[in-house]
Image (cartoon, rainbow, N blue to C red; front, side, top):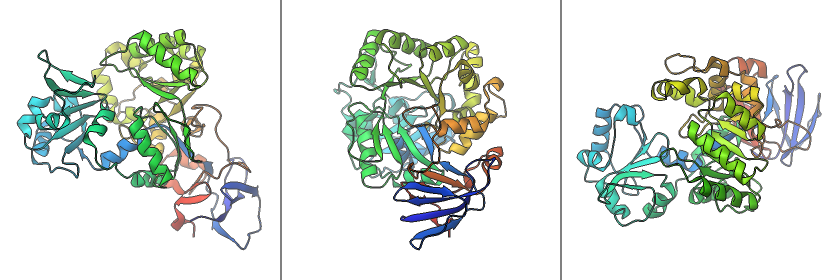
Length: 466
């Protein structure tokens, strides 16, 4: 539904009474009490439901979300069930068996030899739950031409033979496998139903960024999208923008510090801050050292920051480096983190409140499809910090849901900055809840989303406004 809309009786501020909101030509045109309806506008009774700026996901992988829908999800399977599923799998349109959600602790080590013993008829590729690693069987390696390929991520044994492990090779895989890019329409629809209107696509792969930009232009994705890949030019579309340059400090192969400094300097020379993927304590220290040598630029940020002690938090704050974190990973994998990390790191896992106390700007995000794309689940996770077993992981790192919400309302280019507001003249990128905000935050749930607007168009919930 598009056109002109009058929302009657919305809550803008918990301490004030309901007001009406008029949306015209894609912006909030008027706010006031008992606005007179016009003949050309659709009038919706909102019964005191909160009206918020649309939510932002500051770190998401849109193309990977679409690809996951066409993949075999093995995350809940035992090793025996994984073996059976791979053995009996049917190839997709591209001729491959594609599986996601592999966990090395649950499923054991995989390589070409293991996969060959399960299925040596079809080409098979299995993605690690982190998204950083693919495991490929012999038919798959042959189809990829991996024996003679020059990609740095192709792991080889001492004889130079590919082991089947491909590190950070998504762009190369996409180029070699070819085929038609997956549609992102279902991804956009799902995010709209969750109240998400703004997303930062954190994929460093320029090919994936091109798929995303094309999806926006084709109106498959209604959201406003900020791309972070290398080589991104300012796209001529009102819902597309270019953000900081995504750099990966990979834990399996830490970069040379001089090389990292050079990449940061080149990004800054082009006017782009950097968004550096850091998971371990070592990766964070290397990143801070490289930024010190390269010189900082407003907007520089660290993605994940999964392990950071108090001293590291102070260093981030002193350098005005933002952090984009993922609370739902605690809810999904907190017990695994507790068991797998060095005991000395447990107190420093997935900080949130501690970073805020140090003065770091922090915003929550999903890291979907590797994390949960539901922002309401993220609010619960940030405030509870409960692992799947019910353990509280870092009680001192819990934050109120309304604090996490403010991060989701911050601009894409300023995560953790001042929250966007519903105000006259601002874009009508809005989410309408079915109840007041305080009530919604007591038990955050996506079912509270009644309607979502982007550029004044109702992209979710038109049936609930009649």
